[in-house]
Image 1 (cartoon, rainbow, N blue to C red):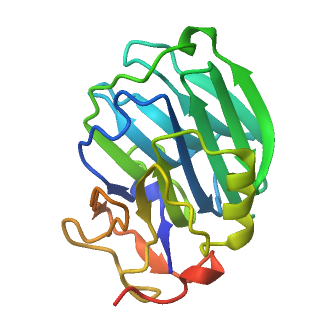
Image 2: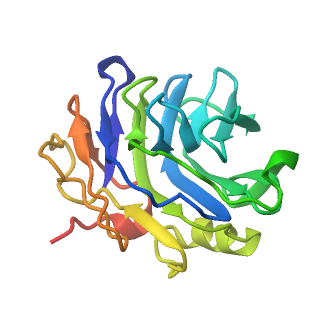
Image 3: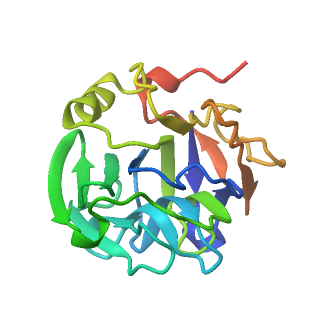
Length: 228
């Protein structure tokens, strides 16, 4: 299954407070999405109290983008991942290498852009996280989303290519923080209920849907079946 979000309704899944990306040398956030409109978030992980994410994937008016910060007081690093076309399926991965001072974005299994960040070198992240989202309560995604994951490490180019090619069947779990397969219900069912969007990762960061996102047909072939 997948989950369909509506920008006009600000539909999203709220994950809640967690410290998963606090004190890590790197992090990777990814998901499959088919956006219909611009200025929308596919996923947003480890926000602080001011609504600034540690790592996020975003579709601007013209390009796929990644946002990242190491410290809550830092300016947000912003990396472009190329133009996008409404109604097209993309697999996007944002990779923040805090220790080595590099930010990268991958689209459909391939590296698209890298950005050196001198202020990150030799450091780990630090956060006062209060929330995370699939879609977002502001600038919500518009369209279906599938298989959203977060890792508390830098994934390699080879690992990202494998995840893209395997379409949900890979076994890359080292450093996995959370994985939302969005398989809780059949297509057209409205997602509802506290903690009903289940995290299959080790921390159990289950999400709560808001503003009526709807389950949809899977975007990733390996995730057709509803979780039993």
